[in-house]
Amino acid sequence: MRAEGKIGECCSGKTTVAIQAYLEKYFSVLDEEYDGLYVFWAAALKTINPSLGPDAKALELGVGPTLYTAIPLAKYFRTIDLADYVGECFDSINAWLEREPDAFDWRPCIQMALQAEGVAASPQAILEREELLRNAISHKMTCDVRSPNVLHQSSTAKYDLVTAHYCTDVTAANPQAWAKVIHNITGLIRPGGGIL
Picture: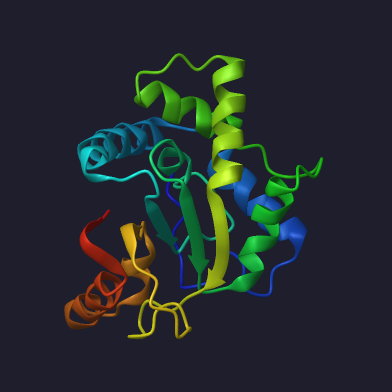
């Protein structure tokens, strides 16, 4: 079941308990939609992989309080930056990064991602992907894909891959606004890089 809503709705002004309830509602039971997403992402990233160098960087836009879309990236990207419209979304991610006991458990998503990649999802493989993801996550920043300066900074950072799962449709009221959002996002991509 895909989480849908208005921009920033899952985190803005929400308590830690409310965000945890959101995560439990949408990410505790993984259905065939998630299986399909992980199969798609595994195939897409496998196709992109030959063009990546050892210092490949990815940017995950609209990550919300989740990591499920970043999990497949950890296999291919040394650096993963996370961005969302609402900074409070990172509280949940920080809890997981810091191994807090009440942090949301992403292991079922990791298991599904590994299976989609054709990897035996043993407890050791899941642990290794967790550590790979923790080590890859570099920066967490706010963003606004409606703005030409998406990352609100003077940085000229460019990425080998920019992902924007589910945030472009929420932020654009019509096809013209969506085209502008896509144009803004593509400004973050290195020559030869891609968007997913």
